[in-house]
Structure formats: C-alpha cells, structure tokens
Length: 387
Image 1 (cartoon, rainbow, N blue to C red):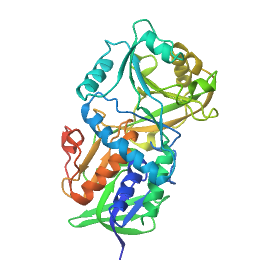
Image 2 (cartoon, helix red, strand yellow):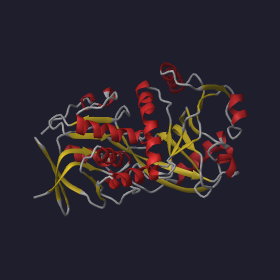
Image 3 (cartoon, one colour):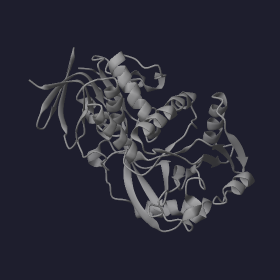
Image 4 (cartoon, rainbow, N blue to C red):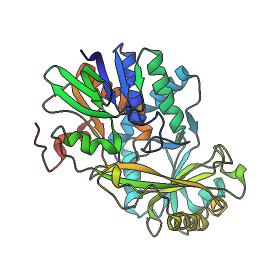
C-alpha cells in the first residue's frame, strides 16, 4: 500500500514551500515533493532578493498585499531571521505614460498612502537618479526586498518542524486523481493523499495537460544582472529604493532594480518583461546574453549612472506567464480536492506566503476569504477538455 498523507504538495518553490507550511500549521500530515534540490536555480524562486510592494495597477492585488505583509512579519518572527528589508519604492517615468497613470489611479482607488514627487524632489531625495525633464515619481515607503531563498527555506524548515515530510531530488512521474483523493508516483515510490496541491512553476503546463487541463502558459527566461556601483554605500537599503521605470523601448519593458545588501553581490537591475518565450523548460537556454547585460548597463548609465559599473554576475530566472499575467489559483473542475497554483508571471514572489495560505485553505476548507476572481481557470478562451 502507498504511504498515505492528508495532503501532498508537488513543487517546493516559493508557493509550494509556503503551502506545505500552512498545511502543517493546520495539522495536516503533509508531503512536499521537489524534482530538483531544495532552493535550486532552475525555476523562479532562487536568489538574494525579490521586490515586495503594495503598489499595483489593480486594487485586487493591493488588497492581497495588505493581507500578505502581516504574514511575512509573522513568518520572520517564527523563523527568527529577517526576511523583509524595508527600502522604500519609487515608480518613475513620464506622468502621461499609460502604466504610470494606471498605477496612480489604482493606488488612489485603494486609498494607498504614497507621495507624488516631481523630478527635482526625486533627485533631492535620491541623487543617484538622473531623470529626464518632465519625469515624476510615485513613492511608497513600505516597499522593499524579500530575501528570496531564505523565504523558501524558512517555509520549508518550519513546515518540517511541524511534521511535514520533504523529499527533494524526487521527480513526480504520474498523478492519478480519483473521487476521494489522488495517487502520486515518483521514480522510486508511490504515495496517496486526500488532497493535492500542484505548484510546479514552469513545469505546470505539461503536468496539467496530462490531467486534461490545457493552459496557454508561456515560459520567459528573464535575465538578471548584478552590477558593481561606483560607491557601494550609495546603493544599500535606506540609501536607495527599489525602483520601476515606466518605459518600454530599447531596454525592454519596465526596467527595475533592487539595492544590494552585500557589495560583492551588486545592484540588481533587469526588466520586467520583453524576452522571447518558449513553451517548455526543456527549450530554455540558460546561457546569459552579453548583449542584454550591456543594454541594461546603458539604461543604468542614462538613469542611474552610479550603478553602471562592472557586471558582477548574471543568470536566467524563469517566468511562467498567463496571457494577461494574472495568476491561476483554482480547483480542478472534476476533482475539487486537487488545487492548482500557477502562472505567477514574474510578479508572484511577494505574494508567496499568502498564496500558500490561500491554496492550503482551498484544499482543506474548500475556499479562501480572498478575492480570486482574476485567477480562475474558466477565464481561458480554450476551455479545457477534462478527462
């Protein structure tokens, strides 16, 4: 007989590790499975930092962040390590740009407390920026960075401390849902469970297709660049904010950056979107592009000249995109005890502790109090032909 669990989570990245943690908090007997080693570099959740912010062009996401921040504070208290570092956050660009206007409208509608800064005010506060005449900014003090790998490891460690089992380097071969549960077969063992959560990142499309759920997901290998600033002290949290540049052109879509905590790591600068996409992880070329790193350096030379120093390191990180870049949080239409979290589209990490709780609540209680209207499977034009 297969070893039985109350719940199995497949995929131990940012969301999966959080789901296992919250299931364990609900006293579920949990198994967390990961095909690679825990905290691997093949997917979306590895690294020193990710942006955390309330600032979104949709009030649903702002409301979700209002729920996520307290969970991060509670997690770092339990983990007894700092996971969130407050830096402040600046969105800058020309005020007539669509994304700038949409962000301001959304923050006003959500009654989010922020500052509107003109070019001179920005450069008085942060002399590191060299902005064009007419540019302005939206500043929010609570933006910051999350220590990404530490967040994944904290969720996993605390889940295990509450009794969860974790098997990494354990690829799943088949998943067989039934009316009352599911059977999950790995290369070496088979397990059964009452409820199943699938958080498999860029591997979701192929896995869900085997369940008859055909999703229009694309994989975008985003390249991260880490640059040595001319003065390391000018680009640490407290001196330099996380930033988003509202532009879409030669540098890609929405360049953004994160201050460094360690001079040997450097300032992180990349672009939100703008790379070619592929259909499966097997097609991903993880080889960094020198052309891209120089293009981003040109962006820094123009707008943040002190951060345009030598490239310290670069690597590729996978985005799993839905067509409209909204998440997927839903139950399998035929098997409601199978819950799916996917398509986090390059902006999901800041939500991971909340998303894990939402998935755990849906799996155990059948619902979540949070608004998931944007995240339904039914929104996709090609309705899945379920088996």
